[in-house]
Length: 268
Ligand SMILES: NC(=O)c1ccc[n+]([C@@H]2O[C@H](COP(=O)([O-])OP(=O)(O)OC[C@H]3O[C@@H](n4cnc5c(N)ncnc54)[C@H](OP(=O)(O)O)[C@@H]3O)[C@@H](O)[C@H]2O)c1
Image (cartoon, rainbow, N blue to C red):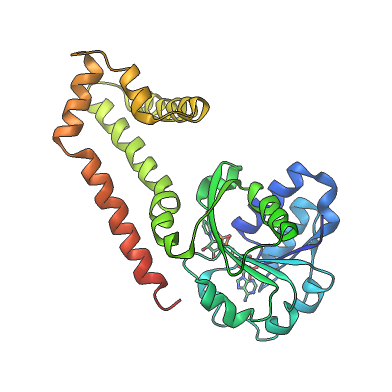
């Protein structure tokens, strides 16, 4: 693996570094991190055995790829020397909402720029990351991007104009699922179950159903129909969901999140 540098060493950098090391434990020597205060970089280095750089020059010396993993608001005040220091290097950003045009201002001579949108399950290697790219990737750079993003789970390439919709589905999606889990738990309590039992039933039902869906790799409607007997209990519940326009509500939810993503990334 060619040398990968992390600018920012918080949760997302840790998830990528740990994912890379889980697949390739000998990669420690190829990973280096730097953070503003040095505190999180020191912690990540201590936890994983990767190197901590104490300056941007040290971070980028010999690095082929830079993963930009600080907060989106740090970009505007980023050290202007990054323009020269990243010349000829592949830059991969995980900054939510920062467009390629904006990233180009800080990294104008990068050999290519990849904008990504991971989601929170990436912290356990079960994420799905959307990504788009400034220029078509060479085969070698495609392999680097795949290696990095597979450390977080699965990945899907989209055109940049689709990033707001992707953010609304997979970026915000885990929160919708957490809300659904809470609603199912509360409904179970209302139906007479003890809270702890209801929470366990809700969580394990979501998990099991999601795993079954992923394993079968078929339309969710097919699996839904398989568990729905005519005029049975599931049918009664689904009828109520349809009467409450559940699908319409989810569509409005995603469109609202997409609209907010567009607003937030308008000038960034
Ligand atoms: N967490 C997620 O699930 C998730 C999902 C999608 C996208 N993202 C994106 O991932 C990025 C990082 O999120 P996070 O959750 O990892 O944040 P985090 O845990 O708060 O980490 C932020 C990091 O930035 C460092 N930093 C601050 N100022 C810096 C500077 N001037 N130069 C270099 N490093 C600096 C901090 O280091 P010190 O404190 O040591 O200075 C820290 O290591 C964000 O842009 C976010 O949009 C995260």
